[in-house]
Amino acid sequence: MSASAAVQTRIEPTSAQAVRRAHILDAAEACFVRNGFHRTTMQDLAREAAMSPGNIYRYFDSKEAVVLGLAERDRERGAVLVEMLERSGDRRSVLTGILAAYFTEMTRGAAILRLDLWAEATRNPAIGAMIERGDAEGRTWLIETFSAIAPACDAAGLFAAVAPLMKGIIVDRALNPDYDPGPAVRQMLALIDAGLSHKAAA
Image (spheres, helix red, strand yellow):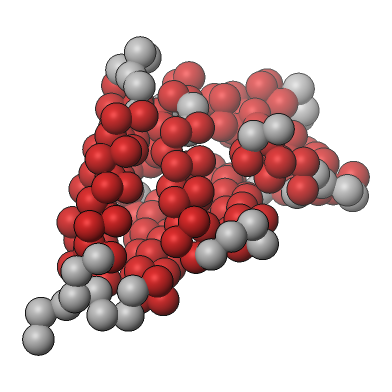
């Protein structure tokens, strides 16, 4: 079983309400990937989920709320993945495992959705705030992890060096159906490894 499949199993909804919310989020993800966030309506979501619009609004009062739900689900999956990997090795192995799993196993649909939301963030304040919050959480976690692994390294500088590579992998995955992220992921991990081996400037 892959790491992503294991995560999916670990956060399987149990209550009827949680199952219904998960079903709506799956439908929303399909609609957003197919039509884009801006062109997708709540009626589109209702049709995709085979529910009435009224039922959709019982769980999410807007498209922005649906996107926030998707973001929260991603955070939950990420937290489970971190927990699983932390029990399997040291922090350096945890970091390598998380990044390799995330960027290698990312589907093209997930990358397209991320790209679309980045574009929407430039004109929608609610989406922009969500993206900024998620980016800040990821940046903080990575910098803290770099510092924990190698206290003498320039953790903030290392993050600044690898962040564009991470975004580039997502963009290439979205734009190229035949894209193989393997070489870029290996380059990113090599850069991290080199950065962790160097001390911060005095």
